[in-house]
Length: 175
Image (cartoon, rainbow, N blue to C red; front, side, top):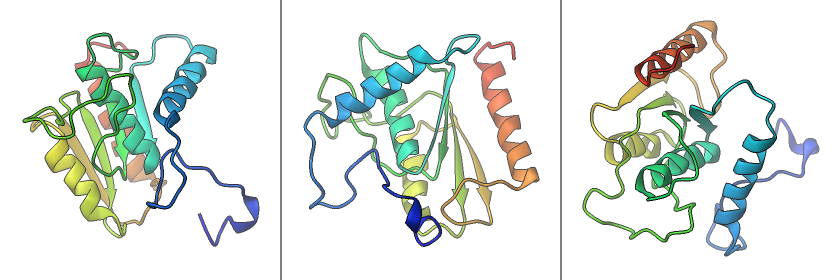
């Protein structure tokens, strides 16, 4: 964000970044409640079928998908996700506390599209999310010559839209 937007604060984040950042024990529920509220208030024309997130938002998007898959009573019904510069691991953002490492429990099997900037300082962490936290055969990947930001080049955006459309069709959606 800095130095380009230094005078436009305050800035917010979804999750703690440093160990000494304040911890909110209700933080995960607040995140889920805010997302549910936004979805409920949206005047859209249909169901929410996909979730997209960038950076910490990508971690939240992946975490929503993961919680949906693991919960006996999921609070969302997404068909796919778009993960732009997202890091592992997923966060438990539902009422149930999930075991930190159960054999295979941490793996997401819903389709996801991952977008990685090849100059992003967090590239290796983003690759870990793709390789270790997503089921083989369920992912798509776009790598582009950029840093930690959302790509805006026409060819990359066209590819991104194409993959999203493809995932929607594979989920049986008529768009």
